[in-house]
Structure formats: C-alpha cells, structure tokens
Length: 193
Image (cartoon, rainbow, N blue to C red):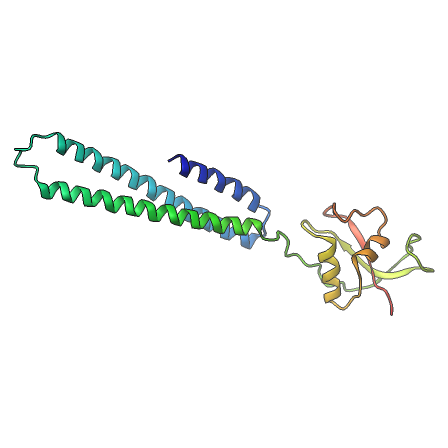
C-alpha cells in the first residue's frame, strides 16, 4: 500500500509539472488522471475483497474438521478467489505504472508548441544600437509564455523572413535569451538582401 501511496505522490508531482501544458495536453492529463483514479479505486475495492476472503479462510480453518458445512471444495473455491483477486491486483498495478509512465512522457515533452503569428506589416524603427545606417525594417512581436528566442527566430524563418537569434538579440539591447518575459514586445529585424 506504501508503494501505491508513493506512486500517487509521484503522480501528483508529475501532474503539477504537466499543468504548464496547453489545453489539449491538459485534457489528456485530466483523462489519464480520471483513469488512474478509477484504477486506484478498483484496487482499493479488490484489497477489501481480498481481506474479506482471507478472513473467511481463517474462519473456515478455525472451525472443527468434522463440521459438515466446511469442505475441501469450499476451501479450494476460496483459495481460487483469492488468487483471482491477487492476479487482478497485479494487473492493476502494472496498468497504474503504465499510466504514470505516460504522464512522465507528457511532462518531459517540450512545453511550448507556440509559433509566432504571421507578421502582417513591416514597421520602421530607429534603433541606434543596431549596426548600419538609418531606420531598420522589421516586425514587432510580443513574447508569449513558453517562447524561446530560437523558436521565435525559426518561426519567422519558416515565414520567409531571414533572421537569426543573434540578430534579434542585437536589435533588442538588454534582451536576455535565457529569461524571456511574456508580454514584452521585441523587434524582429527583416534584413534586406
């Protein structure tokens, strides 16, 4: 039972980490959590049945051997029931471990599948720290939760805008690539060939 409690605690921790996932993943987690709860409830019910059967076996063993109500067939039937319940308990345990493993894989997957939306209009900005004369053309982008500079640059490259993370950093003095703040606007330079 301690093992189950430990796994439930681990599951709770894994679920806490998984809350950062998008709504689709959250629905998957909720579904898995419900299934896990059903399995845990079923296992608890089987444990109660197993205890009741063990109690019944003890009572039958304690009765005198000459009692006509207790026979070898009755004992065999009870033993078979106990074995069946134990087999189901083992299957439930394996299923619970499998579900926890799924949750672990969900929790370890990248948390951001966010891509910047297509930029619709180029803006001009005066940025004195960017090398080169005069204003530079580019796009304003608001950092979203879970964004990385690498993912932002890749999304713009996928849209045909040639930009690197270094160019974004140069165009945004003070920007820390390792600590992007959601809601902050940054400038994505659109370098002309």
